[in-house]
Length: 361
Image (cartoon, rainbow, N blue to C red):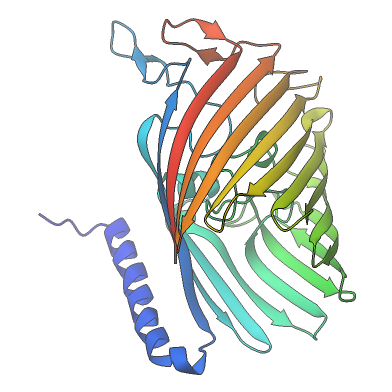
């Protein structure tokens, strides 16, 4: 029997609106409607070569170990697993516009982990106003401008995510101003809620952000900053981040991300390179080689003064709007043995494999 819960009604309304907008878009596609609908759907299979692949229980039936996985965001469940359905609705006018970005599924829940109630499916929700051809104001909830990687599985080359991405901000709510300085240079200033408090501001303190960017036909580079108190304590978070990527030839691309984050000595520093090679029109292969150091005054992941290296080799086969991504990953931790093998012994490294299927629309 169908039960009419708040969640069911909410999903029914969301998909009804999407269906109505899609009908309107089809009717107006020849006249280039300012309305748009896009998104992704993804699922994956993941297994460990030298780690526990299931939850282990004690004699009382209580879980004692979960399946081994890197302590990074997304793509950490064993066996066949789902990512998320992502639906992005937007309107782009000459002066004003909006984006409503909705997520459903485990990846989406992890991305909006501090939201509750109806906001728990909102990945982005903002309106913007173009003051001029060179200045845009954005008001609302938007994904972070820091870092090389993003929440969308289709926009990252690697399917699993880095430590730097996982422990940096995901999203912000506030007001930002984007400035186009000339055809190559850009800048941004923002005042925002504490990091990832996207639904409202529970502590009455604010974070400030800034960005300076350069881009040309070959690539781009962005220097990003955030500063502000994230809790009721007096300690302010500071993060500086450099993201860059360049086409070094018609088939070879090289990206780089370096970041440093601290809150009264607790935080991390890291760097990663992202070389990618297109072997044909439909297949590419890429590596993420990451070094991640947790500061000595306190550890966020594996412990204070811990060094982690992670190598992720990903293939990407594209057929139209479909992508298939097989991926090998090796995580090694210096200073702790955080992973569990099939004999329930602790070890300092984990090798794993996954294959992800992603469809974009």
